[in-house]
Amino acid sequence: MVRMTSEKEMMQIENEFYAQGYSVIAGVDEAGCGPLAGPVVACAVILPRGYFNPFIYDSKKVLPKLRKELCKVISNVAVDIGVGIASNEEIDKFNIRNATKLAMLRALLDLEISPDVVLVDGNAFDVDLRMLNGMKGKIVVKNVIKGDRKSISIASASIIAKVLRDELMEYYDKVFPGYNFISHKGYPTKEHLSAIRKLGITRIHRKSYKPVREILNSLIQPELLNEGK
Image (cartoon, rainbow, N blue to C red; front, side):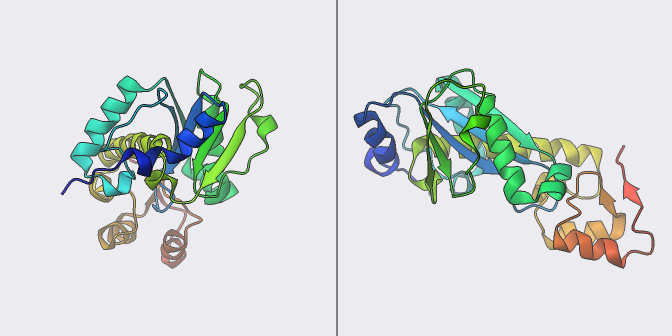
């Protein structure tokens, strides 16, 4: 059953800021914190003021086919969209929380229009606003726990980030046959862990993540790396 939302449910936060005189609101979310492989992808979306779509919701709660359709709808209707990526190497170097903040910052800097309000899913984004040097004026940042279920702007970013990351993992499925990235998208399924034990790690695996690290430590030659085709 497809979940439909209400304006009251998904636009209350935006409307509160509009009532205070703010006019350009960007929603920010990420996809890919939990997987053992691949990047974390963040997206920033600025929707037209007052835009509502009852099908836009937390990407994890939207079926893949509808998610792709909504991604196209959002891309067509959005005033601006920014995308930021942090690689698996950056995740290993900085940890996932900091890499996520980096991806979110890149997504915001990728916007052509400067928002005056930034709504961020969760509580991970506390970057120094002076780093947003590509933007003008004072920016209000509000972290929203489970924001992809409370803000249409954040939910829109959630959907695009998820679709883009899934497409990246589908590409990697061709580069690294045998891991079935097209199915599990890099998440720690039994199939994925079994493939790592059998085939070794690839250059997109997150070596700092415990399941990958433990498998690496158990290998006779842990330096061996599956570079793909």
